[in-house]
Image (cartoon, rainbow, N blue to C red; front, side):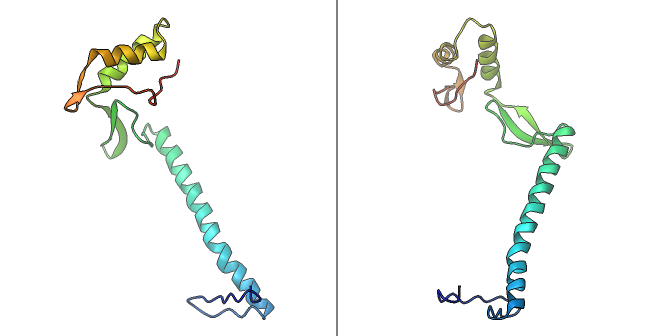
Length: 128
């Protein structure tokens, strides 16, 4: 790095890369944040897993639901689109309609929703 004209400075003390011991310090300074990030990632994953085991919802709410807290635990509650989403799944579960046919049927019903009508677009895919 010295040949490239890069000067390394730290808040606590300067690092002289001509001294071999300073190279060890530099590697520690660069490694510690990465280790801390890995530990945070592990704790986050474990916390999310523990929350799901306890019955909490840990992600964004799917369409038809809102995230909420009940007794200080994350969960879901149906919103005004829930009946329409339920109808979509029930029609799809019959096995006689394709996802596109269900989408077209629901869109043709013109169900009221948020000062307009409920609509499912092609990008909001429903899987068979």
